[in-house]
Length: 250
Image 1 (tube, helix red, strand yellow):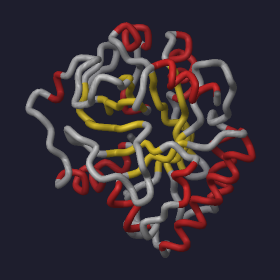
Image 2 (cartoon, one colour; image 1 turned 90 degrees about the vertical axis):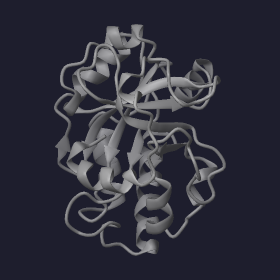
Image 3 (cartoon, one colour; image 1 turned 60 degrees about the vertical axis):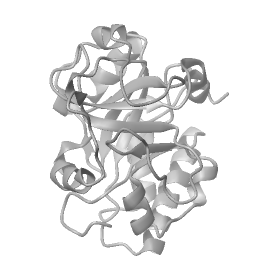
């Protein structure tokens, strides 16, 4: 996802990743998941200009698109990606890369909601995702927060996003980061869909308290027609009709 964090994240993920040699050559509908799944991608400015019609024709049915980071950064390709994905028939959602050590969760949730992360019941707009994982910047792996401090930050973000949009945000994270930095907090999973990051052939263990993954990012080196170079590949744990139901909150 946000390539500013790639060196730390890739190093951390390396020990968990078991990718086949041909992973980079995956066609749009291929991958390690079972039949009842729906293929998707997540993108940011690092993918450059995207031909969303080609992406949709390749079988991709949803995309999470980077919108914001912290309290001052908006991805320069977000507006084009968000509109063009929708027009191509791709179910889209915005995501926010969390910076818990620079401002309150409520501040960052408001920034997201005001800069692309709002929601509408149009069958193609997902609730936005909070991308929270190992800190790629200075300040420590858990952003210098205690487990209690991190729980409070995340809850502040989630509460504010729900207040602004009426939706429960998706949470993108890794099992190892979540269990370490929140102290294996189980609180959000009753309502908030889990978007699991694990670059492997199986999802593996889930964060404490999570009974199921809703989205799974299974590789960072996927290939999809209409996107130049590597792209993160994902699955939705269900068919397209259930994904539309999540989009419409039905």
